[in-house]
Image (cartoon, rainbow, N blue to C red; front, side):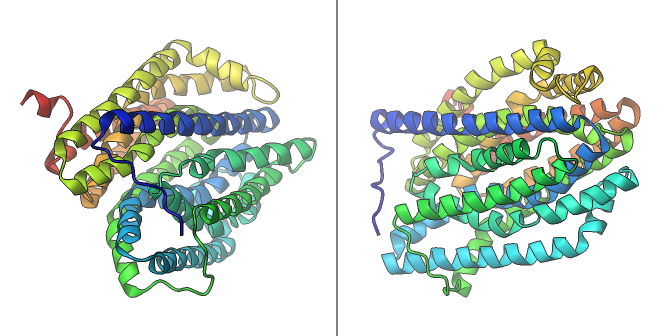
Length: 455
C-alpha cells in the first residue's frame, strides 16, 4: 500500500506553507459545499415556505443527519490518531484488515439503524415534533422512511473519511457537504411542480449519501486501501476504537440531542417555527462548517504528531496560528451578520412561498445567532487540541455541561421570547463552550496560546 510521506512539523516554514495550502483547498471545497447547501435551503424555502410540511421535512431529516453528525464529529477527530498509530505499528496487511473490519462493522450498524427507524418512524416523528398538525405528522413519517437509507452509509462514510484524513488526503472528505446537496438540487428541480416535492427532497438526500459513499470508497482505493468484505474487527480493534470514541460519542449524542430539544420547542411555539429556526441556524452554523471544522481537521494530524513527540512549545504555536486564522475570518463575518441580518435573509430566501413575514422572523433569529459565530468556530478549534492529546473525557465533560445549559436556557427563554429565546440560548452556549474549552486545554496540560507565552 502506498503511503503519503510524513511532513515534519519541526520545519515550521515548509510545514506552515503545506498546511496553509491544504487549508485553503479544503476551505474552498467546503465553501462550495456550503453554497450548495444554502442553495438547497433557498429552493426548499421558495417551494414550501415556512409551513407544516417544511417543519415535518426538517424534523424527518434531522434523524439520519443526527447519526451522520454524531459519527462524523465524534470519530473524525478522535480516530485520526488511532489510524496513524495503526499504520505506523502494523504492516500493510494488518492495517488493511483493521480498516476493512471497521468499515464492515459500520455498514452493518447502519443497516440495523435503518431497519429500526423504518419500523418506529411514527413514534419518532411524534416525539420530535409534538406540535406538528396531523397532516404534517403523516408527511413526516413518509419522509423519514424515505430518508432512512442515509443511515446505512453515514458510519462507513465517516470511517473512510478518517482513513483519508489520517493520510492528509483532505480533498475527498471536504466534498462531504457538497455531494448530497448537489443531488438534492437536481432531484428537486425535476420534481418542482410535484405536490409531493418534500418527499423528493428526502429521497434526494438518500441518493446523495449513496453517491458520496461510492466516491469515498474510490478515494480510499486511490489511497491504497483494498477492502475485504468478509473481514471482521478483532476484539482488540474494538477496544482500541471504543476507548477513543466512547466519550466523544456520548458528548456529541448529548450535544446533538439538544438540537432535537430546540426543534421540539420551536414546533410548539408557532406553525412554521421549526423551518424559520432551521433556516437561520443553517446560516449560523455555516461558519463552523467552513472555518472552525476546516481549521481543526487540517491541523489535527500536526497537533497529534507534536503531542506524541512532546514538543509542547511548537504545539502551542500551532494552535495559536489556527486561532488567529479563525478570528480573522469569523469576526468580520459576525459583524456582517449583525448589521445586515434582514438583507441577508431577504437576499437568500425572499422568493416564492417564503414571504416578508418569514424573512422578518428568520432575520430576527439570525441576528441573535450572529453574536455566537466567533465562539462556535473557536470552540471547535480549541477542542481539536484535546483530541490530539487523547483527552476525550474532557471533551465529553465540555459537551455535557454546555448541552444541559443549552436545553435549560432554550426552554426557559422560549417561554417569554419564543423563537428568539431559543437562538439566544444557542449563542450563550457557544460562548460558554469556548471559555470552558480554554480551561480544559489548560487542565489537559497543554500550552494555552498567549497565556503560556507570557509566563
